[in-house]
Amino acid sequence: MDIIIKNSVLSKLSELIKEKEQAIIDANNLDIETFPEMDESMKDRLKVDKKKIGDMIKSLEEVAAQDDPEGKELYNFTRKDGLHIVNKTVPFGTILIIYESRPDVTIEAAATAFKAGNKILLKGGKESLNTNTLLTELWQKALSDNNVDKNYIEYLNLSHSETQKLIKENTRKVDLIIPRGGERLIQFVLNNSSVPVIVSGRGNNFLFIDDNVDFEMATQLVINGKKRISVCNAIDKVLIHRSMNNIQERIKFLVKNLKENGIDVWGNSEITKICNEIKEENDVATLCEEYLAPKLYVSLVDDLKEAIEMINQYSGGHTAVIATNNQENAYKFMQEVDCAAVYHNASSRFTDGGQFGVGAEIAISTQKLHFRGPLGSQELVTNKWFVYGEGHIRE
Image 1: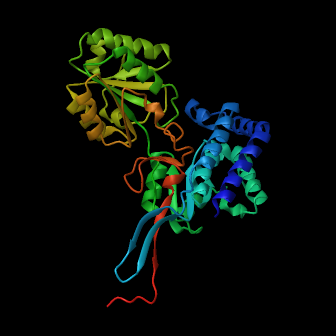
Image 2: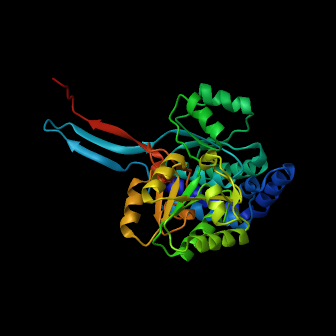
Image 3: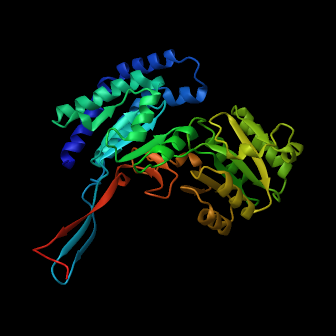
């Protein structure tokens, strides 16, 4: 599809969202009222207000401004016999994304896939049906107004069993599946899909506070990392160097600031002896858990090596942070921690396509193939070999 047409569709959709702002908010309020039993984390992901609508519009403008992901030349070679071989980027084809709560995915994820020339099938959760249905209608109007097949963006209102059948039997000839949800959903897709899967994995992100550190800065990184509890780039675990000076005073300072921000602090029996404001939790299984709640777990480690080992064993492979004044330790941490994004003295909350400058994202991949981290339009392509001859045969 021509880049001018793709950008025209995205611009039209942006106009329609501005025009229908109140209708989108009304549909979203209906969704929220329909499921009053939702926890705060899910409500946060589901809610659409003027700010979120503004973010949708901004993401569409950013994607429209990007270079065309299709047709980029990766390799060009002409053999001595004149056979010309070129490798270029091409769309995957049809992408199925399965997600819950977040209606902004209906705009941002579809925009990234569409910009790369893909068709997209959207399967959201029942809790966001009214919002997603309206947003899909706006998508399809933007497509139709530009004489593009409206089936480039489809919303699938399927039951649980129908969704499982789609995954198992690939009845819609899907080329790629991106599940964004809990462990059960991801595992089901991985176990049952016959097509490639990109896992938008869980968070469970760790922050390590080294012994040589500006502790007030480190505390602010932790606080900011818990600013939103429902997002996958939130901090859940804080590891503190055992040899830190004034460790008791500093831990109390950290806990005080967290509690003032409504965050419950947990830790094992060793750290509760240092600060009795920390709630005791000795089950090691908590180290694997993504909380999606106003909860944070604090633990002591002997050194940088132990911190790296713990993160690589227990984290979701999403994001990890080191707070330190030691440049050598920062380098070692960032090289050896096995996460999609690693930070030195910066908040985990920047792990986001928009913050990284790639515009809207379809997912944050915690896999190493086909790509890792925020997936924008430039990553939603595969490659294809184009070979040009004049009757060439291989002897």
